[in-house]
Length: 71
Image (cartoon, rainbow, N blue to C red; front, side, top):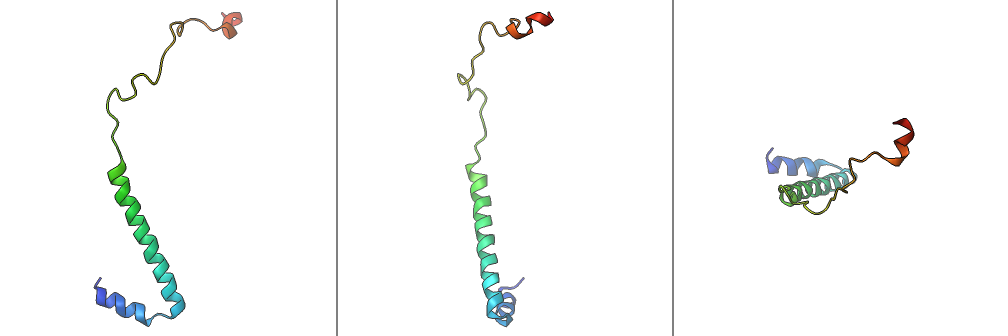
């Protein structure tokens, strides 16, 4: 859509509706900024990047005390 046509349509609106259009434009600008930052800030995880965060105890495979009566 041509900018001049948008300008003419905006000028034909009453003042109360111009305020709504301004609010909507601000909403669209903030949405575009979020989308822009979302693409640049997303980091792809690398294999092995969580090394050392998790540990498995040596008795991991041993039966639990709670289930002894069922065995």
